[in-house]
Image 1 (cartoon, rainbow, N blue to C red):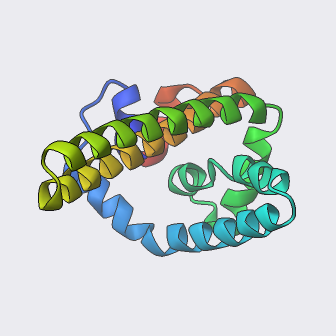
Image 2 (cartoon, one colour):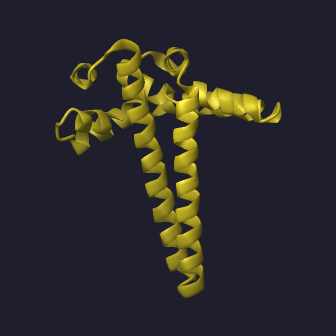
Length: 164
């Protein structure tokens, strides 16, 4: 998240600083992932739509945690506030990204299974999954920045100051 904000601000993100920030938020991020996973899972059990609604509601909880240091429940509440009124747009964004990711994974997975297979196929699959996860994380961070700009008029410079 830090690297995305720094890059949006036109600065060169420091690898060491990003790693230090990630390590400091590891446990709270895990707690958010666990709570969101349980909530979304329960929502999916209740007819799928509630699960999607909860996933969209809490989609920017981790960037809110990293940026605003609100704690686990505060970040989830902040995500709820920021995404209100923009959930259809987020839904469209994430559906497009998921469809593209599935298409790429199927194409590369099929190609490597047909032509190479084995260990090379597993390595290619791991690389594609890693890149897909990275793109989804970046999309989440950019969504957070855009939602803050739309809701509060917060500039990228002001968001970068939070990290200083």
